[in-house]
Amino acid sequence: MEALMGLASCTCRVTEPITPAGVAHICTQAGHAATLKKAVYPHLLRHTFATHLLEAGVDLRRIQLLLGHASLRSTSLYLHVAHPALHATESPFDALALPANLGTLP
Image (cartoon, rainbow, N blue to C red; front, side):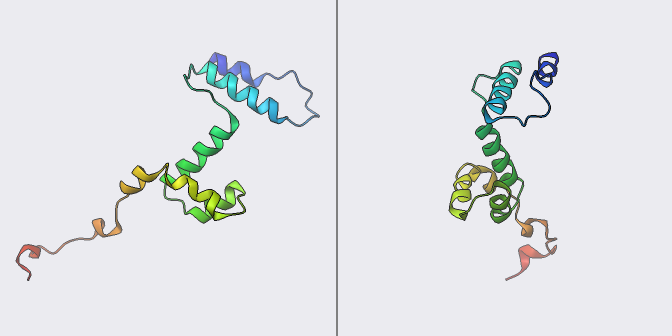
């Protein structure tokens, strides 16, 4: 946790916006601080965010808007990543109460 706290201290002037290189550097440092084996970069966070939204049941159109994609085709690429999670989604029919005499119905 202490290593992550060091990431918050910045030597840049507050009057300047953070640069893309600055965001990438912070992602890299956070990955090192968390001792992750894979590289962490801004697009990975964006991709992970979209995948988690899809797995949580957020509709594809809303994810498209949040990511700023012009085409739904771009957003639909996340469907292959979340495929196992979509299969694990419970059907609304599973929540229906079944009649006790279901086995005897024709």
